[in-house]
Length: 103
Image (cartoon, rainbow, N blue to C red; front, top):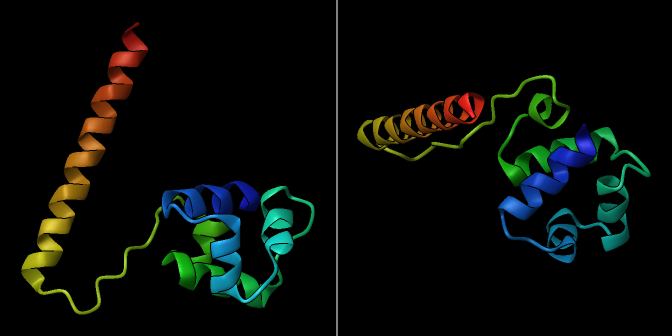
């Protein structure tokens, strides 16, 4: 759900609701309402959220579980390093899940 994605992304960035509200030029109450599923952000706000969090709108709407990492300005070598890190993290996650399944 959108509310969960906003909350998860905000906390992953270590931002308070006030800090996100400032970045979005909205009130803290608006952010609280989005996270508590009281109201939905407008399409304009959804697009702005995707830019603030560097994810796609599809990711925010849970239509796609792939998140987006902005790599503009990185060299090909740096991009390759990021891909390796992501690959390693995914493998570690799969191993952890497999261990949990065996318990």
